[in-house]
Image (cartoon, rainbow, N blue to C red; front, side):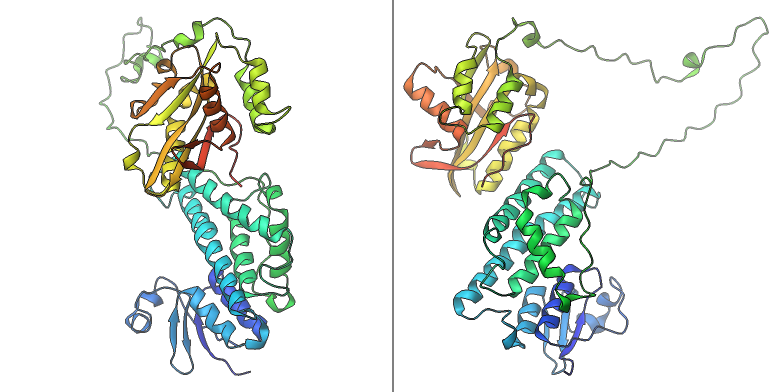
Length: 430
């Protein structure tokens, strides 16, 4: 079959691989440029005259038709091979194919790229809370894909479509960037699907084998260059009878500023409690929250109301909240700023409602009978109201249980997303 045109891409570019795979599966021939140097050729006037944004993949057909943006190119290529089935058999199929492609691009690959650039230092100002928030969004989307494909061979219908090629290509990139051995068991069906697709005979030479990461890369701050101090003039030789100074005394003023003494946390002086907070966190993580033998039952059996107290927490300024995921990231940031008090508290706080009409509320289990000594380590603690709950009162008990079970409802606003304070890995929403 004669070539339909030229695709500007580079061998490692995943969207380019996806387009090439779609062409190969449909029996469509595409040329690659004889020579192309990225970041050089795509900045030249002749390239920009065809593709003004200077991006790849870009496509130019033999008939002069031009396209950029990978999804548009892939759909065009698939449409030239109608018997391939890549675009489905009905308008419903086509819509579902677009749905899964869009989810994989916007909710998996976007966060994969951000995580890679953040960890590599390509994005300045690395912070752990941002990294955690990006990872949670990526894993949530991967979980959606895993759940769907767990009972199917392909994403839409009974044969390979463009959705399968897109999902497999973008999931393979996630597996190469940060989905390591610890996370892979969460996605057995998605990984099975990825391997099935990339190993199709038609795709030989397009996709490489999927690597298995032992551990995900972590951010390493750049080493600061040591300041070179001007050499001091040579000192006159000391008298023979004088003992040479010790090295510590010869150092300039490195040790002249005494270290600030550590202030003992007053919570350490509280009488020993019968409730082991780490045991509670483990019970909450491993058990169903409600029901016989559940986490709440464990808590009530072991709760020490003298050594601990239970509190309701509410963000004071709900009118400032906009998107649900942004508000949930705010909760995560608040919890991260409570790090210094982590061994004295457990929390389950969520975002209730919908975009531009939500609130932040939840429950905390705190050491002692006063909230402030525990939460004042967070600079923004005064942006929240804290009210002690009495678990003997039905209303307070229902609020506490709803916050821990993530089914709390306030003024008609239902729980949309949430986070826990725990030393154990976070529990991601379904």
